[in-house]
Image (cartoon, rainbow, N blue to C red; front, side):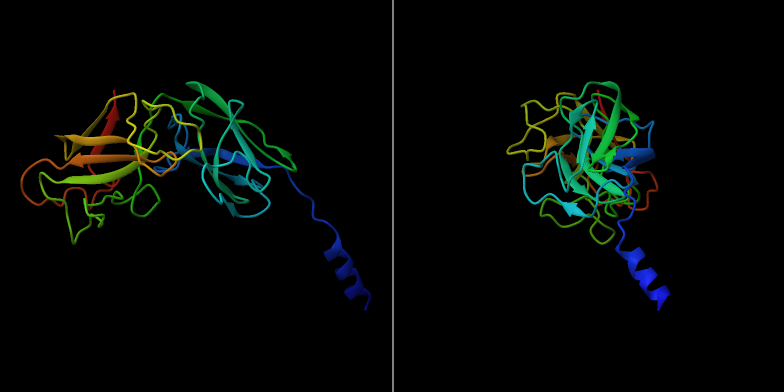
Length: 247
């Protein structure tokens, strides 16, 4: 009987609440998941991993994104970051567009306090492609013009424009508020070039994807004139022997 009463008493006591902690190398590009020192860019979608990052799971209920979600806030170099999603072990956020290039500190704050700062490198552009597996590995999340997936059953054809999605292409031509969805085509200030299988691939468009936050759309023309299975078995982080670079 005494043991039962003791167990009930212990269960009713509040648990010790720890302040948030960011894992070493735990602030990563949301497409590639490559850890630091892989850089980040203003406007990028990022994931932050750690412990006690939020009291429970919560997703942004609407757009534009808020800088506070379920009591959690994040800042990059003192600038608040819009939040897509928070949970005890992961946060998905957008790097503020107005964060300065260089080494900046990242902090997470909850009702239990602020995390120790971690540092990340910010560059004007640091592109990465989203993959079909959402892990940073395997085939790219590519689509045909009709929206169907590019896969082994429907490989891209030479001369066809396929649609890729990425993040980290940096500041765009027309200013957009952090956390706000793009409302129109809006290319990055820096030039974007692509190669597929080592061959130059023309771009029909590279810029923000209308209706989304921090997501960039790249319409790239596959070189050649015949059907191609290029990249479907690739093991590079983007999943394609496709290189996107900014100049």
